[in-house]
Every structure is written in structure tokens, then in C-alpha cells.
Length: 355
Image (cartoon, rainbow, N blue to C red; front, top):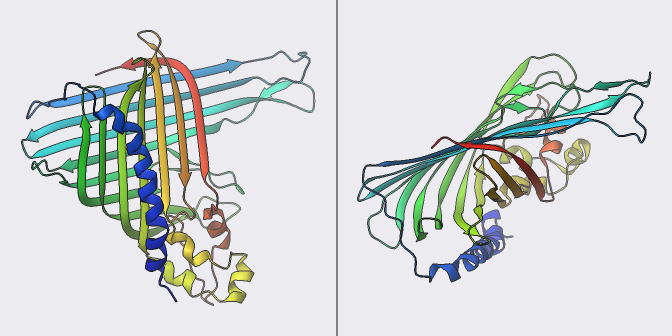
């Protein structure tokens, strides 16, 4: 019988190579064009920071016919980068992404009057990554990186309607080799491959239905990671396109033994798929694309696309009760996502560039 490592080496790693090659193919024709290479002055910081507010609003009177409902949708988005060629052999680059938005929906009450429902979260992201790359003049540059991800408000509690602040907390440390295929003023292509360690800290409500008492569980995993960052301008340089493709193949997970040890009867009792033990070790794919154009100095249009395949959310650990059964089967079932997830946001709003 093949081991789990042998199984994914034959299938998932091949998929990773194909996906990254496709992204390279889109950039390769432009790499041959004559263009001025972007040179960074040693020791100088190159910061960029912009923030935008997007708002969509509608409202209707109580006697409005047609059943339409008013709404207010807003989102505050901040993006920033900070790069420095510290010396001839060391490059530092950090990327920050912040986003939060809500939707307020009008509701027709039983009396026929209109009122506003409690606002619901529409977008939420905290993402900070720093990469230190050693530019030694070789074809492959050694690198180390660190990344922090979270969200401002966790509203995954569907039974009690409660929320948690900054949950979960996800940390990632990576090391490996990178190659910069393109480095121009408006076009960049950097790919890196290495080994990654991930840690997460997640709060759970002790009572699944009520109360605010929480417990914190931590997980650890590690594996191979391939990340490709691409930035260019398209449509006669009117639209800026930023793309990030991340492929992560876990090779160990701190709670694998619990899932591996479940019997057929225990799997059926918890309503788990028979092969759930393999889910935390499945290949993760995250492809993020941002298209933005500046209509006027302060007015911009942004299109955000993200496709994510994460068969099991490793920040949700299965825990054992005293009798050996799974203590949190509902949380584990909610962490299983057999199909890919897709997010699309199109917005127009006010954007201000600080740097």
C-alpha cells in the first residue's frame, strides 16, 4: 500500500507544476520585450500605501411597491508595500492587505413598515507578509519569509450568532529558493519554492448554543510551498493587474493521528466521510487576482477575484473526548470543503494614495 507521501507526489505535485507553468506562460511573451529594468537604490526604502472607501446605498419608503429592499454596502480597503535593497546581497519586501466591509439590509416587518436589519460582514482580511531574499547573483536566490493572517471579526458561529475578534490567528514561516523572472517599473514576476511551517491559534465557544466563554486550540503543520507573484499593466496600461498563486502541500499535521485512529463505526457516528483522514493533507491552492484602474485622481474601479481550494481547514483541530470519540464533530464537518471556493467583488469608490 502506498504511503500518503507517495500518493501526493504522483498527483498533487504534478498539478502544482502545471498550474504555475500556466501563469509563467502568460508572462513569458512580455519578458522578451525591450524594457528598462527596475533598479533599486541600495539602502533606500520604497513605500507605497493607498486606501479606498466603496459605498453603495439605496432606500425605499414604506409604501413603495414591488417588494424592493434598501441596502447600504460599504468596504474599506488598504494596500501597502515596503521594499528596500538593504545591500547588494539582501532584498527586503513587505506586503500589507487590509479589508473590512458590511452590508445593511432593509427588512419589511410584520406591520408593513421598513426597518434596518443588523449589519452583516461582507469582506474581512488581515494579511501581512515579509520576504527577505538574498540576491547573490545566482540563478536561484535563497529566501526566508514570515506571514500573518487573520480577520477583524469571526462570524462563523451560525447557531448562537456570536462573534470573535481576530480569530483565528495564523502564522507561517518559510525558507527556500526564489527566482526573479521580471523586474521592471510596471512589471514584476517572482516565484519561490520552499518548505513552510504553519501555526494557528483559534478560539471556540465552549457552549455551542449560548454563552461567551471560549477555549483556545492550536495546530501545527508543515509542507512544501510554491508561490508566484505577478504584477503588470494591461489594456494600454490603463488597468493594473496583481496576481498571486500559492500552492501548499502539507506533509504533516499535528492532529492527523486522531483522524487516522477513527474506526468505521466512529466515522459513521460523527457523520464524517470515510477518507476524512486524508483531507488535512490535500493540496491547498489559493489564486488571488486584483484588477484596478484610476478614473480620476481619487475615483477608482476595482475587481477582486479569488479562487481557493482548501479541502480541510487545518486551523480547526479534531479533539477527543474521554471515551475516545470526537468531541467537536460539528466544527470538523464545518471545516470540510470538498469543492473550490470563489469570491468576486466589483467596486467603485474613492481611493487616496498616501505614498
